[in-house]
Image 1 (tube, rainbow, N blue to C red):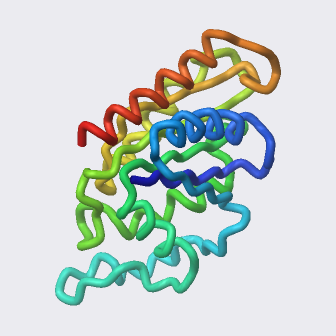
Image 2: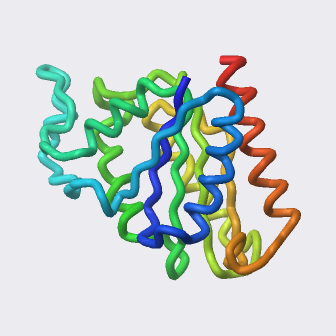
Length: 188
């Protein structure tokens, strides 16, 4: 059993990393191996809209030769995918957009969609008050379902937490999501 984490934040020790570390520690305590990738470390190019992935007469994966297909292969073989991204100016940051935009090659109109067996946690952090971006974040999380992931939890964590201060409610939210992921992975 293993989980793949992709962090879109450029901050190596920011809120996204702190949250995913907490989740991954719980997973590790439950015999689930984890791998973490930073989008900044990956060679991922933007979608070129060539539409080769949409050619149903000659189905193909995304033809761009970069790290995206390799990471998506790992995600498709894993039991859990954790995606964490900061929200800048009311939007996902550029690294998150770069990664998610390549999902275009994996929607239901391609032969590349995942099979809904990989569970998914989507995490967004931001400096505004807790809940401020919930509507946007929940809408953006639906794209993960559109490529065949089973989104089991969406964490919207504002206030610059958890690194801006000790917040028992946020820490409980993170731990609860991790425990839910463990149950979901083992229950299938």
